[in-house]
Amino acid sequence: MMNDEATQIANQAKILSDEKQIIEEEKGLLKKINGNVHRLALSLECARLDEYASMLSKPWRFFFLNFVLGIFRGVGFAIGMTIVAAFLLYILVKVLSNFVDIPIIGMYIAQIVEFVEQYMNKGVMTH
Figure 1 (cartoon, rainbow, N blue to C red):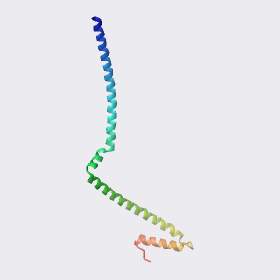
Figure 2 (figure 1 turned 30 degrees about the vertical axis):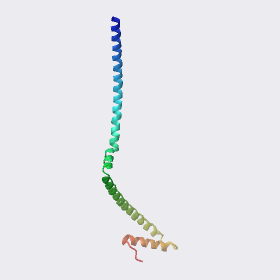
Figure 3 (figure 1 turned 90 degrees about the vertical axis):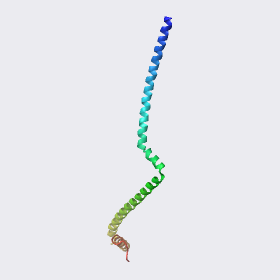
Figure 4 (figure 1 turned 60 degrees about the vertical axis):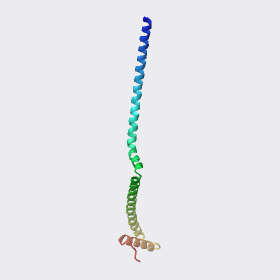
């Protein structure tokens, strides 16, 4: 009987030891899972999925915002192209005015320079 009790105690000790080892392994896995879930939560927060979901739940707001953004992009494009075109016309006038003295094409370049200068000053050409 002593032998049976000793065997039972040894078995219980082994079982407890195995259970402690399993619990430690599970704690390590839970820490790893917790870290992964935290990184996933940060990634989802950076992706701003909540705003995307709210846009899908309110489609008229989505369309309105896209419409307003399109207007601003169009106005910005028009202003930017106007500035670029004015700069290019200014450069064109300065460059072409140097070529007015060339015998054959000087007359045509003079007309182009005159047209551009009138357009820049008045907005229309009177010829």
